[in-house]
Image (cartoon, rainbow, N blue to C red; front, side):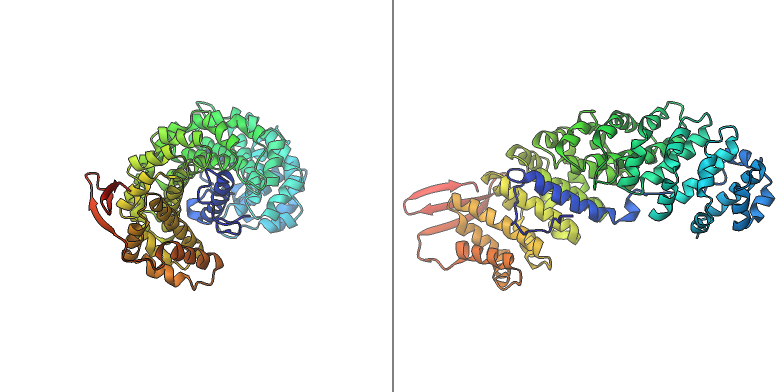
Length: 524
């Protein structure tokens, strides 16, 4: 997978104007991989059913002798499952379910090696024995919750079409358990996911979403739907997935936190792709609800909602504007002050893509008061958040006007920005060097590069840039040498230029330049 740290073709800071879409995709892909490593924040791929307290399950369990099921060995389970006696089969399957539902070290491999998975799958067709059908489905759910090899064992014996058929079961708990089993299978990866989709599971899943669907059933349905949207190498066939988008829009009005979280995860997967997919999501009218979720304090919902919004603003300008017009900027600014570093990082990443936009979008970000919290992240944030904030600053310096850069400098960006030149990560150093180069070139256009050079020197930047001329990375020393040569080389100190720095009424910096008898004022 390409890395955001891949500078083999040089840094393209203004990726909204040049290779913006590809650059955004590279950065989005790499960040998604990084964020998925935070397991506590991410959605579970597979889940075992450990709940043996459900009353309906207890009612079904009464069909067999509970004391006997608890005493059966694995060999007895295997023998009884292969029996033609349905009473023995039910007792054995319930015993198997209990073994596979224990929290630690369930004997999934022992059951597979006993050769009874094909028997379980055959029993799925037994519509006349609902208790047996339910127990078998539960067993397969827990086998499919294991490793990929264990899940594939369920797949290769033909479980998927039979489980899909059970979505139409007259028994709600059988249908719900089938949903769960299919969710575990779909969570195994793109191949298994596409097999489930290929057996037309999605329309049947959507039919199960009704006003009277229980909360627990709804949670399982939405979680399974999110797994059908998940993974991107390759992504799911979008035409098969597209019918779920209006449903997700409706589900964002649901009150249950788990349903909301899994809906947002699904949307984050679907927006992590091309602009036409982002557009299809936007056309459901989902943006206002998503943006409003950025005000929530619960990480379980906030994390996927923020990631979805971040993906959307990597799209084209109109897609980015949809987030801006829904009030997203102020919420993102507030999230730069969030107590969890991971949220701050994702908010800064989203803002960096907005700052890579057009001049109006940059102006909107400035008007929303994002400069001050961004600079505070540069100064006080954890390293990963600082890195994203540095991208945001450099993107602004690339696509912004001279007035925008004046406001940025006036907000005090130079000291914390220059401090990042001491980073151990050469990629961050390059981002900062590019940003400083952009600011100096902007100053040069209004003949104030010397004043900016003095300010960078006073911020400690010059000393750090001089040290970087000896950096082991070729790009770092070339960029640092270029800045020194262009803006800090020895010049005639007898020039008749004098500089005065003062604050104006807007708190910005004014540079008054007097040359000979003529006076020109520039609001840099």
